[in-house]
Image 1 (cartoon, one colour):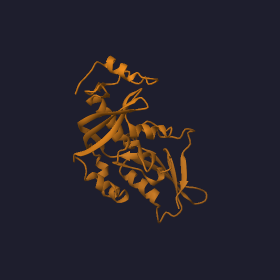
Image 2: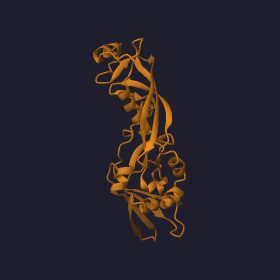
Image 3: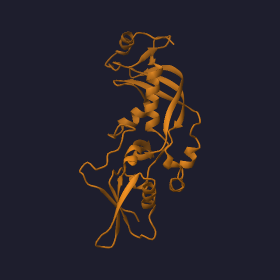
Image 4: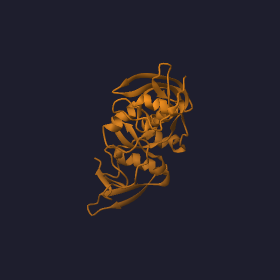
Length: 247
């Protein structure tokens, strides 16, 4: 792999109106085409793996973009709804706490808030064709950058293909609970993949903030959602709580 001075690589990038390159860790191939260094490629892939992390659970009560605190109304306390049952399971796992009251109509209202452990686990990830709040119980970690190939530029934007290996690490103890695995049925399958080396391939692009995965760029540009992987705040923008009645 030929490594050229960053100033020269930036000069190669500065064609037309494209000015993204400042501060990016960039090398070139034998033909002089820009591509990321191994560390820049690893950063881009790590961001992508966290944004599309499969080891996260999205409870039904958060499926429409709700934020905490969330209030769920129980029409029938003898038969808890799926949404309530899922949240009660997370409460037993000490990710949530709840306050239960009966209103003047006799309806039971459960208001759930995040605990410190819940706040730590709740992230923004891309699931089901949209950005969702989800409790993540393992972390994808790049173990090796196998190959990096420079690709043809697209609209004067340098592109490269990165082939890599990764593992799921740092599994949370709460994900191993029987009640969690009963109420979130994909968890056992994901847990079987932990500490197993898997391979992947992604296209990365040089932007004004450095090299980033093309799929992250596309999903981020399609909405004004938070930065992938960031913590989710525990209140609505107007300070109110979410209240839904689950039939």
